[in-house]
Amino acid sequence: MKFLMHKSALAVCCAMCVLMGLQEFNRIDGTEFGGGMLFRWREAGLVCFLLALILAFPLRRLAATIALLGSLLSLPLYLYWIAPRAVCFLLGPCSGTFEANPFPLPPAIIKIVILGLTLYVSIRAFWILPKEGLSPASQPNL
Image (tube, rainbow, N blue to C red):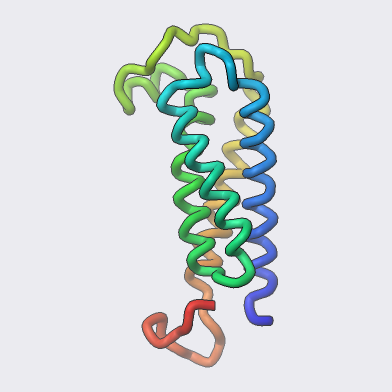
């Protein structure tokens, strides 16, 4: 099976992101923060990671694209935990008055690092070509 290392790395990163997302749903759901725009984006990101996890082995490039989208959808929530005013400035007014940060800073930084790793693995899994010298246009979707 070609590209087994890239497919496996993509599947592991997507599984880590799914586990992170499920942990957040248990913690945030039902609070004043649970229904906001950033949380809905994170929900969409979780669905993307689940789909990418399922498609990682049969359709590597499609799964990498979906994981890339999931990473970009999930990133604003983690950045909000670190710098809420900067995110509200960039994305517009945030809904609700979420003053107290119930999440310690180190887990948020770790989650951003995992998302960065997922972004790197997704881009690498998408662009790696076989060594026969085929151009991307003549390459079948592996």
